[in-house]
Image 1 (tube, chains in turn brown, yellow):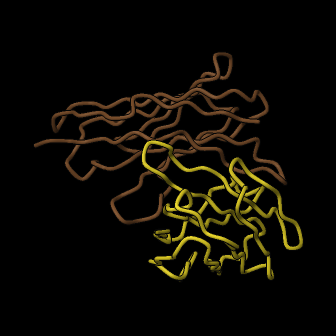
Image 2 (cartoon, rainbow over the protein chains, first blue to last red):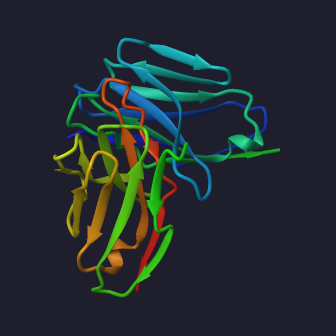
Length: 113
Length: 113
């Protein structure tokens, strides 16, 4: 089955700096790669996703890149703000009936002002 | 628009007791999932249901049973709770073919003493 590795487990940056979180996956059949943000006491919420036919996707300060050959994808947050502080999860899935998202272990991002 | 609703939000059980975690979604999604979240372990898939009438084991199914009661509801049962099942449990739903974005509930924090 799918295995998703996520690094780093913790990341501390100064406000305004960039943050990068990296994930690798094992199943070459996976073609859907979402990123979730989880704030304290809440359930994870989707912030951006990418599919295997796309190499990069941006949404304001957030971008995701995908390298299918190397089986890795990354989340980039620019101009970080204190409200970006949260736990971030990457996930992977073949996006077919009968499959489910498999998550990485999460990255705790702390943005200090 | 409630999304995914989990009950209860908090529960304390004694070792050996049983209980059922309830989950309901109002987005007409076919697929539903149960994950557990433990410190440093990320979100691990317990069971999922790709459609009404089907259920499949995930990464950590031992000690749990599930029931897909109808399209809206997916319950998780602990027959004989153990301290190792102390965790935060999340239910999620998604629709294959619509990107498989998973929508999560607010979680159930379960403590087994």
